[in-house]
Length: 503
Image 1 (cartoon, one colour):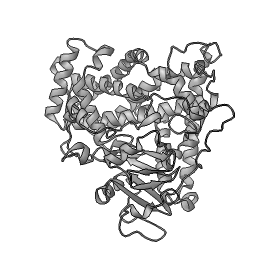
Image 2 (cartoon, one colour):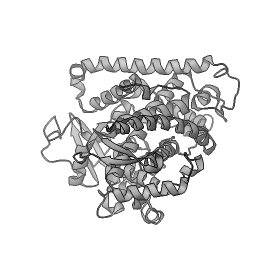
Image 3 (tube, one colour):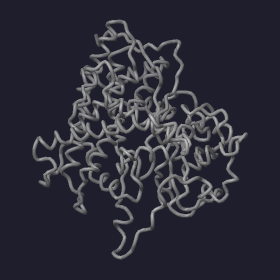
């Protein structure tokens, strides 16, 4: 969990004005990179249209990964007049992790989510005060004490998953891994964070909240690749569906908040310590230094942020890990042996026992290395600077760090970075690597606040599943990646058999 300080504006002396924030909206790279011509781009660039030959609007990330292999650790792409700079070399990414010179940039894809998430933790601009206020209020909600309180609820949701998988196994039917992991993680964040039960496992189809969420993410992704002049024409029907999706998300969250307020006491200004869940903290807790509170509108935005980001990324991480485990018998056997040894005869683990699954955590980290479900993050220059001692950047200039390629840089990961090998995360291997080469949760002050929550949940669930089932991959399946701002295996199913000791 990132530790941050109050914003520069909050600490500035009375009468001293904080620097003017960079302009809002998309800023094409030629505005901020004085020597942009030195950065390579794909061949066969077309006038007006840019680098669109061979591009697929459904797989922009994977297209960029192919270009990265061809063009090197920094490159640029242009589409319909918009110029983007991509960075993935380990040295350059480490330079951009310098918080004194670089900060989070709310890139085009993230900015497209602002109509629904506003100045929530993930989508706020750096100069907007509510992200820091919310971070300071909510950070104790991810402390070790708070996490141990969430553990029983995580176990309860995991029981719903295993009950569903037991039924599928008994019927000889495969399980839909991404679909079921999405149900699991939505229920987990909803119950632990907001005391709400979506009843996902009681439904044959995804909960409407999930459908609306996928709709908004997919719409944001489409807006990334549709020329602005064509947006009204191409996305006319999609605009209406997106408006309906956003309205449904807002109504659902408003109902959750209203139900909590109706329970009595919450949000009444009673000065409670907010010892309950995340929603209690949002409604009851003031900032410890300033006394500020989150506004009702911002609470809605934060709840949507947590519900969407808090389950979408973790479900992808679990799905990728299960894919690799099912294809790696030796890794699976080693991870299962660790679970059996650490948890012993206990039917379910105590909170402290999850952190002792060190090899299983390596499996999860290696899955996140190959396919970080948040596949990139944008950084902007706080001041005029030079990236890597070579590329001048004006204040406000930005680049997208491709985590999927940073995690494959041979300079950091060796000669065969595409291979799945959890021992890359053995302590000695981690110490031998450069800093800032593993970034599945972003970087710096704006890194994911729920990192430890996600890792505990995912490790717990993987341990429970390995203890209970043998996993059988479909021999005809080849990993396909679905892109919707986050990444997910597409069409992944597994067949199960109950282990003898778990029957």
